[in-house]
Length: 512
Image (cartoon, rainbow, N blue to C red):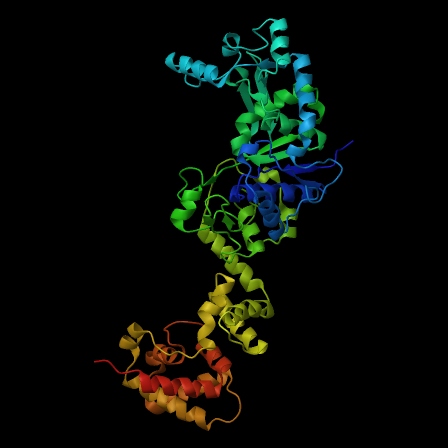
């Protein structure tokens, strides 16, 4: 009988959610929905020393902004709760004791000073990676080396201890990863990881395995940084007797720096001036604020589409996908093994494409947001027309107002570099004639008609229109580039054009 697909995203509330974590959440969501399954969110807060206030809410808000909310979570519980590991604390010791009874774990009473002395001893002996393992444990203070009555006495006295897994000395651990194929690790390279800490809280390794089992997780899709831990997790499933229900693993490739050399970091984002987090984040201790993609003007659908392609491709030339289309096309088999370079320009390209897909009414809403911030207001019909001709020139919603405000606010100054090159007697002649023609015109001015009348003015002034078009644009907009000028003329209307031409003729001087 096939099991229901159940995947989980399990972040730690230690700060803002990194873009790599968001991609992991997205891939889990897509896989679950593609296979008619459930997407769970579990907060892994066993390390209370690293807990950061506000981080859990940040995770929730980020996923909601992206419309990939989990089916089960701390704020939307199902039948497998609690969904915070700190609230599951009481159960973990029972599982650790079960491993002790089976001979797969042991008590260790070593002090921090004794552990440091062991590492120094191994380093002096030129051991490359000093660790507490099948060899060094025989020289340490634990229930494998101490008499049983002494172990019992130490436990009874309340002496601090940890519980470590007992890794076999000579064994090959194999697992099949859905991204990387067969992975084989010799147990001699593994150390006896701590499963239960001295404060009574489990480590990630124990809590992760127990929770995935109890929550019926069928597939573990997580970052490449967890691949070295996977052999230990396979052993724990075996030691618990849960091999038949062990989830399948898929370890995702790293997100790399823009130049491809090394893992993407916060420092890289700051250096290149792009966000690293979905939403802006203010550190509750330092007060430092980190930029977010949302506040930077990225649309959630565009951001998701961009993220999906950081390691995955659909196998054809398509690049634009709605969330539903991503669900339909997604497969783990098309995730690459190699790291993926982070290209912020590609993120901007996606944003441009999604902006252009929006209706003129939706774009006009962005435009009016910018206007209202400056106390300005225009009819919605005009706002839609401005948005329609500006959308091909916008990367972010705010650009619609930033780049299109000249159609609402008449220029009070002009680009002097353009003026020096293009403003001359010919442009003055044509604009003077064009102004006269407009003053005689009855009715509204439409774009095709505007072009005819401007051509007529150029012919009357005996000037080639192509030579003075940038000067005409300068007079009307104050700048030397922009959207189709005849469309601008139509939106501004006859009276506004006359007003702007008059101002330019009276203000601009012919240089040289």
